[in-house]
Image (cartoon, rainbow, N blue to C red; front, side, top):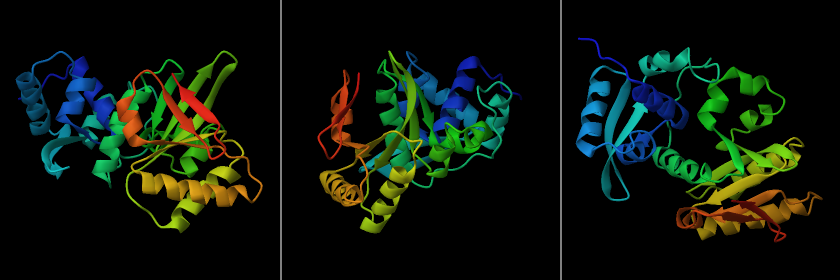
Length: 246
């Protein structure tokens, strides 16, 4: 028996396509708003049975969570009406905790009036227009976790978003930051750090690169501050200059 796909179902498919993964709680918050939990669970189960989305359980932060992702069948359902041309097959999440955190980060970022648009990594890598665009191609090449279009009274511009929740070798951080500094088209990077050791290591690496003559353009913020504030977020570079979202 065929399943009738509703406009809200399509909103879910677009949401999962852009974010790669989401929990049932995130879906209830962002897509199936003001709908009873039991109704959401029944609908998600039907969409899984008809293979528009996938489902799995996982233990994250000591709690069992329901995690959903889109299938190729789900992508086909939205492909012709999606706002960008989808040219690549769906890319599965290779770090679910990281990508689920990004869903919550996006939720906060999109609340600020200064953020005109939010583009996820999957959008950048799966829609050919971004790789062909002079405005976006360097973000695609550097595999930014996201791109924010910032709107000001003097016009709009693009900034990169990066998020790290686990420690990496100093060499990897240096390579990442150096690539951003060598990119003349990218004006600023908003870097969210999962903890203070990551933040400190990034700032130390940033200072070393700064000695090569670069003007600091990486602005940092701890993840706990993203979770805490809703009216504004203040990122800061190693010079003490700020980049504020409001």
